[in-house]
Length: 97
Image (cartoon, rainbow, N blue to C red):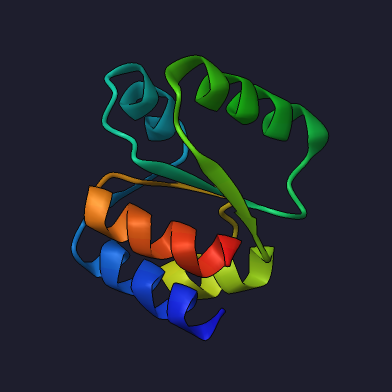
């Protein structure tokens, strides 16, 4: 998990992430390589994002909400879209494995 936090922080500093409503715009334009959601996310938001990911064929993983916010330096984000394929592969391997 420590490696995933470091990699997510690096992606954030490289401006290769999207948060908030921007995620939906990036999903529609096929720019998202991986979606990371907080495990304490609300059911409605979780369903909306997982449905969008299924429709646009984007993989998604879940992560502890506190660690997610600590990694990106924000206080209250529940989802983060990774826009770079390299960061996405590294994070997917860390969070799935």
